[in-house]
Amino acid sequence: MELVIEGLSKNFKDTKAVSDISVTLHKGVYGLLGANGAGKSTLMRMICGILKPSSGRVSFDGMDVSEEGFRAVLGYLPQDFGYYPEFKARDFLLYMAALKAIPKKEALARTEELLELVGLKEVSKKKIKTFSGGMKQRLGIAQALLNRPKLLVLDEPTAGLDPKERVRFRNLIEKTGHDCIVILSTHIVSDIEHISDEVMIMREGRFIYQGKWTDEQTSLEDFYLKQFEEAEEDE
Amino acid sequence: MTSLDLSLQYDKIYRFCYFKLKNSHLAEDITQETFLKYCEHYEFSSEREALKILYTIAGNLCIDEFRKTKPVAIEDDIQSPSHEDGVIENLSVRRALSRLKAEEQELLLLRYANDLQIGVIAGILKISRFAVRRKILAAKEHLKAELMKEGTYE
Amino acid sequence: MSKLEKEIKAAFEAPKPQKKEEFLSRFEEKQLSLTKFILSQAGYIGKLTWFGFAAILICAALSPVTVNDSALWFVSSLMPILALLLVSESARSERYKMAELEAVTRFSLRSVLMARMVILGGMGLIVLAICAPAVMFLCDYPAIFSGLFVVTPFFLTSALGLLTVRRIKGQAAIYSVTAEAFFVSILVLLARNCPERYMNPGMIKVFMIVAAGSLFLTVFEGICRIKGTEEITWSW
Image 1: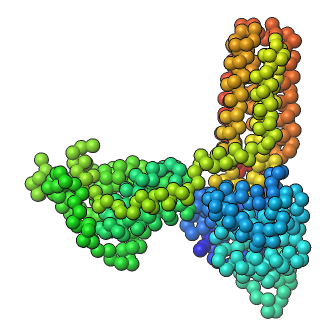
Image 2: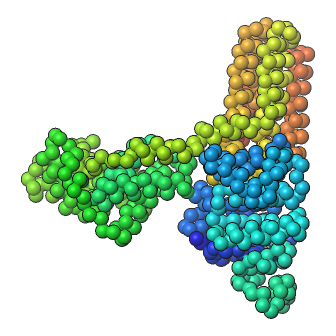
Image 3: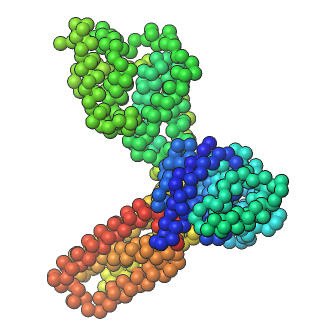
């Protein structure tokens, strides 16, 4: 299981949103840390094949990001998403399951399983209109898991979650990270402090740090700030 | 699969695998595995794409199988005749074919037994269409030469 | 195929496969075909659109009886509304911010959009196929004019609408398309006041050009939309 990103760049008019990112990822949880505007969402969108890079390549186990096979193993939670107005939680998941080409019987079973997993079973027949931000986010995570993805890309998944939900989310991700590649982006350090195997810190479209970190001496927060200082010194 | 006639392609992939493995049971197992693998990743490709992918998967699975076990031709296969009429003629063609290089035999199978288009064969073998045409002609010439040696080709 | 080629084919014959039927029947059960997908997408077309479609069809069908000689104008002015409904519905993914989620699935946004446009286009054509001939036979005006008068506003609105949704994002696009539809409707109603101006032989050519041009533009924009789904998901 290997995600290979080679020389990925994205330019918008005169800004370089992402500059020459190259990294190879294996099973585990990868935290993508960076301030707003650092290029995290742009990078994630390119990894998911939604955005065409200006240069570079993304491939998973030899499949290029543009192939149907890549999408078949991908689960994505965007930073901001909507829903069709009349949808109830279960309708939403069944709709997404159909788009992921999951046969009806399996889709029904999987939907129930996931609603249970993210704690939305009691409200499965309620309209998404009535959901809180945190509930909606949990639904988003559920849809990302429908096709048992081997690559899970989560863009700011903890935004809008209260502390209890954050903990629940962390546990969920830790479990998932055993069998697949999870990339999750955030600008809040504590989200990934305890669950990431590796951390990638992004600033102005580049990785200023990439690798494992251990919480033996410094906390990730200090570590994160330190990287920024060092990056500034280099400039 | 949306654009393929499954029954027809099953036979063709099976023929391809049988040619490689010379064992009908194994060939069928690999054929089924090929279709299953295909569906895991692809479903809505065009017919051309689908064929290229199917043969590539089948080819790789056959190679893996060879590495694992050295498949042996089984009793049933050797005894079942494929044709009642023209058996003798066919036998000499088969013998001549078996004297060709594996690569040449594969090309003739893909083109004449499985009716694949030149473009699709080019995609499977990852060579140019020009090369495919050239090699097929060469293989046919080679086959003719072998048949003449036997004295059965006019 | 030459004799040699036939013999080569025969030479590669393999012993009959034993487990084929069983495998294929199990296998085919698991497949979710493209046609099934398109049909399933029909189920997700908004209720308002179906309602509007039915309402317009019924009104148009009843018009020769109820509004009599104004039937042609009535039906023609409904056409832009129909086009509006269909174009707005096609932009569902963008309006409700589902485009990104749909883009990352196996079928992908492209298939969803294509399925939607096939269904909606079909609905549009059904209405046209019923209304245009009906108006051509039942109205007093020359058939060719009646026909063109029904068809042109529809394609004009759909062309403008599709042009708009590709270039303007979100809810603003829907407002624009609505304005365009009403604009075309008003043009139709204005024409009603001086029919002689529009129904002379000289104008046939003009109408045909506008109709053909709009039809072409509709199809062209529709195809570009399906090809360029990246523009839909990325809003910078």
